[in-house]
Image 1 (cartoon, one colour):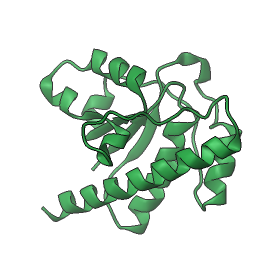
Image 2 (cartoon, rainbow, N blue to C red):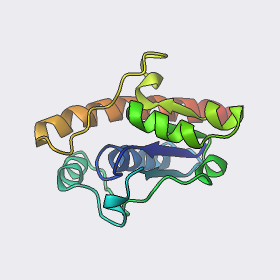
Image 3 (cartoon, one colour):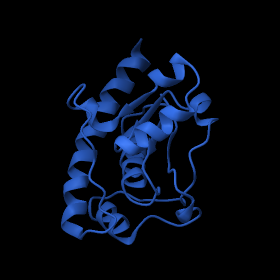
Amino acid sequence: MNVLFVDLGNVCRSPLAEAILKKKFKENNVKGEVDSAGFESFNINEPPDEKVVNTARKYGYATEGVARIFQKEDFKLFDKIYVMDTKNYRDVMSLAKTDEQKARVDYLLNILEIGNNITVPDPYQTDMQDCEVIFGLLDKATDKIVELAKSVDND
């Protein structure tokens, strides 16, 4: 299962989710690619936000890579595209051309509370404490993704 996380600038929520899921896929022998992307060009080629890097490190995860923009080709590369908020959802859906592409897109926290379209708060202009809360949400959601991916692998 190939998974893409999408947020606004690709420097906070999505790279943190990517780091968590990559390690969990490896630890659970789940086959698949994990990546993240954003929709705003102002962060292209920048590393993840320092708060995110420090939070990930605290829990044994490593953020890597630099920010990139979501592209139409991502629909071909990823089985699931998880967005962090309503704006991201609208942005991704605006590029989806088929029902199959639209079906790949969902709010990340819908994996915990189906159909509630709860957004992951953006810690970009907040403090480390908010980043900790967001880490907890992403940790729970990625556990569910691992469960889902393992059930798909067993089919």
